[in-house]
Image (cartoon, rainbow, N blue to C red; front, side, top):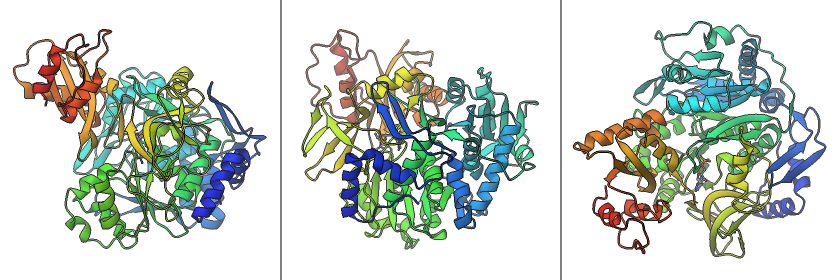
Length: 632
Ligand code: WTA
């Protein structure tokens, strides 16, 4: 089993050791896994390429480590416990032995449908166990999974399928989410009609009892393909640096990029970080409320917990259905010990009043986690007092799709906490703060751009099909370092507090969106000439989306126009990207070189118009007054 740190003294010692002897440190972690062939060198890297290789020459299959390895010792322990959207519906649970069998059957079905090592398989699915089973099946035979969050539009799905030329799409007929009933397969059909020639097969998992159109030759039912298969499927031997998955995420340019993670390093780091941050013990019930469509679900619903031999709860629904007590009801029902969620959910539930919490005992809770965005102090305190009964530590875990796993976080019950601080880096992680010119800022009580000086095993290796973009985005802004895109503060004790993105990425309810991506979508409306999007503080979502829009003609019915713009954005990206506020303007403040002055737009969106700074050098200073008075 991966080594687990037990005290703050052990933490400091491990930290120092990982700095002084990184290869030794990581070899010791990696040795706790099952390798088909050992590595010849622990690490071979440079950040200029970037060219990063962990456990060089090592051969393995991650699913042997998630499943087969546990059969002798925990075959009858529950691996995944699934709670349906409908509180009356029965749970489904899979022991490690059952999960192993299901994954093998699905893997055989993928093979029978022509999927081979290296092929890309796209998942567009609700939170049902078959999503976890499917991605593990893909990993078992060496295929590369690309999960697309099922809230994305047909257009977004189609872009992602095309970018990585997926051979198969795995989906479901419908999705029950809260009171909504969503036709999922219909979105896949629309996406495939936008020219996804690479897709040969669509596998459809049946959630409902309704007829849906199935295209003969292409569309097949999951149960027809998977159920008859053998429950044995030898795992394909993978190189440590073979791709495990692609996950698309937004950046500051318009097009989402496919972040690539590889087998060996991702395996070692997700298990290591999971065990150390959450301090999991046998018998614990761990629940991460994320969706597997995001990195949190990949690393901390599926891979991390299974690699560590834990029991992972998977929830199909939403926090407020059928009422705002659902999360707490589930915690009591399954005696949850570890609860990991996003600040946006905490704030939304806090706003519903304490009575929803007080109906439930929550006495099983030992550790609370937060992820995805900065947690504000009010939410932190409420979470700590009401959900953690002022006892359970909160691990505020900072990380990114690109980092694969948690990099900065308290270790539960070990690191002394400070509200709203992600606190200290995990051993093996070497953060630093720099100026925008790339100069390292030493000492404490300082603020700067958050970078990493040294690779950790689950750092991204490339962006799919475009290595140069990976280099430019992450490795060239600050020379010799990995640039996170976040700003951070290091306090007098050396604790890190994440301030937020310093690039054109906004974080809406913990979901990353590029402003350029939203602008491109808005500009698809025929009545729009140009738009500019900024984030502004939002009580529940963390950040809301504020859009400034120039129209071709004067708009007579503004409400109707706003609704049309929202519909366009929903259609282009998905409902998560709908602007919260839309202001129609006659122009955007621009510099003489034609660059939009976003600083001014952000200030107005924040409602702070008192100090806009010097606007006299703008090409069109007169629009500033108009924008100020017309603020939405
Ligand atoms: C933000 C989610 C503050 C940050 C795992 C980062 C956080 C982006 C935290 C990555 C946290 C994530 N405190 N900010 N604990 N965790 N972020 O790729 O801005 O969806 O760069 O990964 O979320 O979002 P992503």
